[in-house]
Image 1 (cartoon, rainbow, N blue to C red):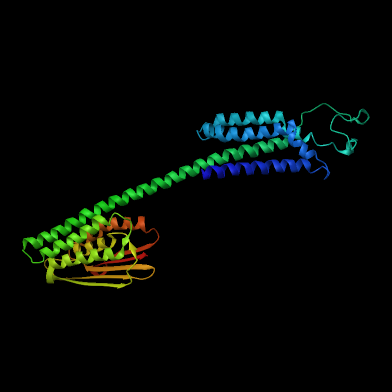
Image 2 (tube, rainbow, N blue to C red):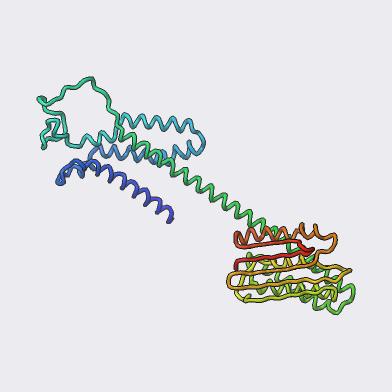
Length: 360
């Protein structure tokens, strides 16, 4: 409703400006005390003038441009435009209006004489009568016609652009939901495998492991559907996951975990850090050799910095580069942190290193 009122007010203001220019042009040659400019408003010539250009504008605005031009019926649109231009040429609305202006004294007209044929004695000799071209009416036609075409075209273009943007946003949201659905089963599958290993070996940590898995699943099911969650929730999930891995791997694995800075009131996309943490344990440990894993998280007023590093064991270099979790994490970062994140992954010195910086 508000938008409609703004459009109506814009049209009214535009026409008032247009007619004020015409009246000002008409009154320019009159004396300051002459009331002819105001009397012109009630004259048939002015009514015809106004109706002609109002009709041209709204006929083109509501019918010709939407039904012909925007429908790509360009030839018919051109025919209608030329036909109306010819009609304006013959009607001569502006010249008819200007005929109300008192004639100049240089032609022998008395100053107080009303418009009409000149006195016989002052009648100038005329040659063959030629139809004068009302160039002002033609200029006004071109202006009004162009404006009434441009507005619907611009509106259609803006609507189309909004639809494209909305479609892209919907596609991004749908893709993001798919990515989340890919992360969750993959993560839970690996965790259940870990607990299964503990249960098979009758490890005393099976009970605590199930409780930690319960915490992880609560986080995954309750909070992961949101675009952003508290950073402390993501850290708690990471700690539970790392504890599960420690229970399974024992002394063969050494984890150096540090969290510094202020994590309160910070938000982060869910499972982003978990994806890289899980990847570390998936490819950075070996059942035959000892391994060391480093995970560091630092949060300050404007940034969240995450670092993780693990050794690359023989035969796993290509796997770490092409992991589904890493690819999904990249896409999610592009969706949720456009131009607000830095991600560097390298395998220099046979170490898989991830450096992630997020603008908090």
